[in-house]
Length: 459
Image 1 (cartoon, helix red, strand yellow):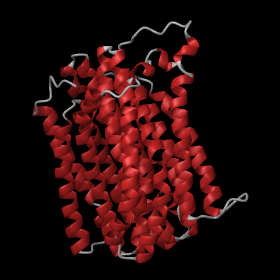
Image 2 (cartoon, rainbow, N blue to C red; image 1 turned 180 degrees about the vertical axis):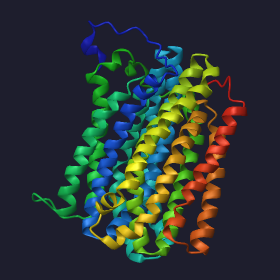
Image 3 (cartoon, helix red, strand yellow; image 1 turned 45 degrees about the horizontal axis):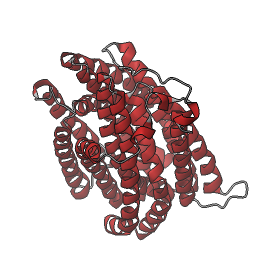
Image 4 (cartoon, rainbow, N blue to C red; image 1 turned 90 degrees about the horizontal axis):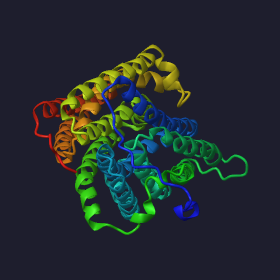
């Protein structure tokens, strides 16, 4: 309920949420984010294991169609990251009213954007997959999957906005509750709807889509329920800013728009990669979906430190301590590389158990093994590149990020066209496209942080 029911309470005094460059502060912010990202990845892992038990085609199609949905989700992530950057800056300045205004407008923008993307995707999906895929069965399966999956989009976008608020205000540990609830619902209904247990219909691939949408609905309810049950609204009274603020919306979109386009290019490049792999064959596509799932698990730590990097850099600039940005980024990158290296070592030492989780097919496991080694190498490069790149995001120079992303994706797609499309190279050679992408991004973002004009940027 609203604050009217607690009129006798005194709202907490506005707090200036400040961070330092210590390893303890870095890990304290990154650890809950990492756990909140890992939990949904376990759901994604379970989803793929269940689909792998049904058939190789279902596993393969969930990869192509899932990336298209992830593309829509990342548009929302671009908006959320723009909101997060602004809230983190206001937190560094101690502007509680500004945080409330940005958060409320971000919610309104997320609702409008998600509904528009739902309508667009329902129209666009048959056209896109009809042109991009060669196997007509893959086309039909993909369309059926996405027509169910897309109904979870508004809920996950609203959750992204709430997560941006919690991270930027130093409450990243609260993300865990939302992640756990969404994941538990997803896994339970995956089992019930994919296989048709306990009287539920056996929907297969469409059941996996429905279970994910239900999980996102529950996760959204928990995320906003926490805001009220923890009485965070006493410090950030959203009811005072329920009217739409066009000026704030323009400011949020000005910061977010380059990030949205950036994610479109990034995930669009990945979708093109999977289209090319589908042309190689269903086995290559199924193996790539397994590899993508493993990549999602191993990159959890990386993305957590990436979110930490953008938030702490923006906060540091808000405190007027721009000279500490480069040492901060260096510390975050070092910790991230060490953590990712530990995960990569486990994959190299025990590759078969990880690969065989998805499908009891020794031939498919051996087929995917060389590509797994490439993925381990690319995650090490990614761990540094993503942290440095998101530090540029934290400076507020999102148009610079966009230029870097476009350049990197163009190099990536060119590699895919030549190596996969023209030369029809082996799958592990195809996956080296990730190395090319992350190396390009690291060089450009590192040079910009060192020599670029990012100091004094106002948000």
